[in-house]
Image 1 (tube, rainbow, N blue to C red):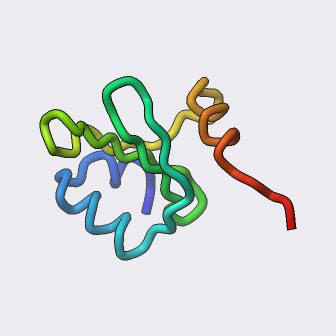
Image 2: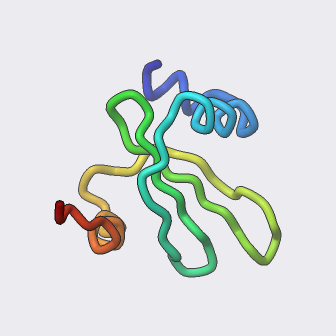
Image 3: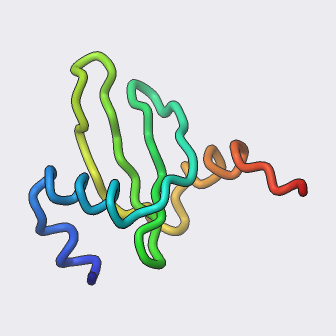
Length: 80
């Protein structure tokens, strides 16, 4: 699925697609959100969950050069 197609989907369809076709990578705390990172096909997608409101606020592709990448990388352990 192309990025633009995914962006046009309703929120509940994006979430269903991630949970059924995506792979959970890692979760982080980012300001007032818990952000879960998924791999969908060959792109990373973020799910922003707002604890205070008990709802998902936003689902979108992770920009490749975004500063949040450091938070994700700090959580991943590649030691075998």
